[in-house]
Each structure stands twice: as structure tokens, then as C-alpha cells.
Length: 225
Image 1 (spheres, rainbow, N blue to C red):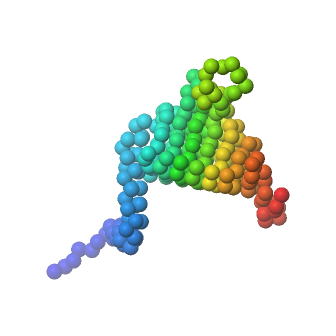
Image 2 (image 1 turned 135 degrees about the horizontal axis):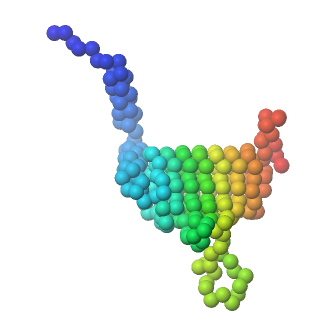
Image 3 (image 1 turned 180 degrees about the horizontal axis):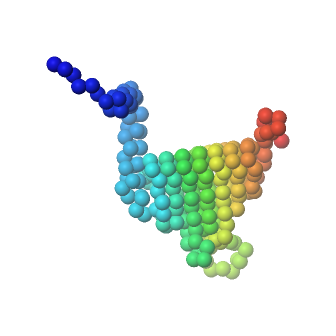
């Protein structure tokens, strides 16, 4: 009996699929469980979140429980992972300056991160935001001591911009205040409070955060400040 040769394209595809199945089979139970959850939340994003966000990219996932406010002002790129406990909220204060949260591609946002934008918050591609980070895209005015509105309900900053450059890394528990702009590949140390902007390729740490390391392109090495 003569066998029918398998077309080269199908043969390659079958080999790729078998390789993926073998890799999945070799995972531990919890690795398989985590992968199944990721697939589920990616599917939820594809079926549901694309309908409610301004834009929701390919292979992105949001894990519950998450507080999401005004998703029509939130753009999420491709391959974004947002872990449980995140607050992701755009607050409308001034219709002439609507809020905007824009998250680029390949961004991971870990547990219990707080991102609230009265103005604009831009997170560029390849950024890592670790657990319990706080991005303050607005402020609570407190100078008027006779204002009957409690401070927590007063809002300002509709014209503000908080920006995190491509490839940056925010350490556990750090806080970025309104109008901070980080350059590319900036590393922020754990529990730091960032009150001002910083350039590309530096490490900042402390409260208030200051540069502790800076990459010198001419010398091709990191230098302590």
C-alpha cells in the first residue's frame, strides 16, 4: 500500500504542536493550573474586555478580583498581564481634559497595584510593575480647611501626566506621584517615593527617590552617583 506523503507545511505544524504538548505535559500540577488560568483570563479578555475597554490587546489577561473604573478611557496593549487586587480607575473630573490610562505591550502588573488617573497615566512597552506599587495620577487638595467635602473626595490634576518609560522596572511598594516622568529602563527601588522625573538608564532609590546608579554610555558602564 502506497503512503501519501505529508505536505511539508503540515509536517512542520504537527511537529510544533507536538512540541508544545510535550512541554505542557512536562509541567508540574501547579504550573499547569497557572497556565490554565492564564488561558481562561485571556479568553475572557478576548470575549468580554474588548467590548468595554477603549482598546484591549491580543493575549492580555486581567485576574479577579480587580476594581475597574471607566474602562472606556483605558487602553491596554498586547500581552499585558494584570494580577489580582489591582485598582485600575480613570476618574472623570474635567470633560475638556478626560482621563486616560494607556498601557503598552508586554507589560506585567502584579498584585495589589493602585493606578488611578484623574489626568493621564502612560505606561510604555515592556514595563514591569511589581506588587503594591502606587501610581498617583491625581491629587487630593487639602489647603481649604473650611471645605465641607472630606479630603479623600476632593480631586485635582485633570491636566497632569504620569509617564513610565519603556523597559522600566518598579520595585515592590514604591509610589510615583503626579507629573513624574521616568525615562527608558529606569529601575525604582522597593518602597521608594518618586517625587520628580528621572532620565533614561538609571537606578533611583529612597524617600524622596534619588539617583544611586547611572549608566554612562560613553564609558559603557554603570557609575554611582
